[in-house]
Length: 118
Image 1 (cartoon, rainbow, N blue to C red):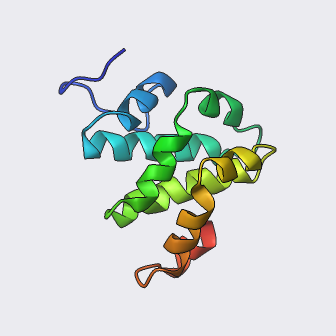
Image 2: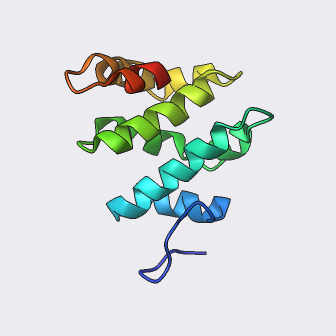
């Protein structure tokens, strides 16, 4: 299903809708999609890490670390570190996330909560 102007990705959106949102050109939809994915990956018991990775969303998450929107950076960082904390650490490294994560953590705008999650 492709999202249109009539659709929004909220916490009730489906997995496929969140991926479509992340890959859209609409910054608001991108944020909602990333937020949803981060919440999926934050589940304590058996997060769907492989299912999320199989969608090809990781490069988008990494690119959002360069966003001027600190909330987008935060959600992306948190999602990426949730992936890195699994057996898929190498995928995060191979996607080029490590230098960008480092930049986010030491940036002047980084807040303690940001450092904690990332």
